[in-house]
Amino acid sequence: MGRIEDDDAGLGGRVGNIRTLARVLDSAVRIPGTQIRVGADSIFGLVPVIGDIAGAALSGYIVLASARLGAPASTLARMVINIGIDTVVGSVPILGDMFDVGWRANMKNVDLLEDHLGGSEQARRANRWVVAALVGGLIVLAVGAAFIGYELIRLLARMASST
Image (cartoon, rainbow, N blue to C red; front, side, top):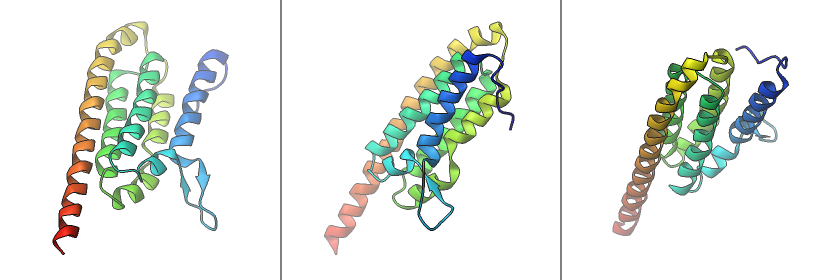
C-alpha cells in the first residue's frame, strides 16, 4: 500500500496525523512477551456500549478527514464498511474485543486513503453529500451497536439472576 510522499508538506503532514491517530487506535502498545499490538479502540471496547461508541466516533473522524482530503466516494464507503464490521463485531463481549485486535479498521482505512488520495476537485465536491450520508450511517451504526451491547448485557444479567 503506497505511502504518501512528503512532496506536499501540508498534505503529507495531514495524512501523517491521520496515520498517527489510526496507530493510537489500532496498534499503540505491544503486549509484553508477544508480537501482538493493541490500541485505544481495543481498550475502549472493554467498556460495554460506551467504548464501542467512542471507538466508532474516533474512527469516523478518520473517514471525515479522508473526505476532506479528497478521497473518492467508493473509498469512503469501503472505510465505513470497515468501521461497521469493527463496531458490530466489536460490540460482542470478549470475542469482539479479540476481533478488534486483529481487524485494525483504522489502519486499513489509512491505507485506503493513501492508495486513493488526490481525487479531482469535482470528486471532492461530490463527496460532501457522501460524507453527509456516511455521517448519518455512522450514527445509525453506533446506536445499533449500543443497542446490541445493551441487549447482550441485559440477557447476561437475566441469565445470571436465574441461576
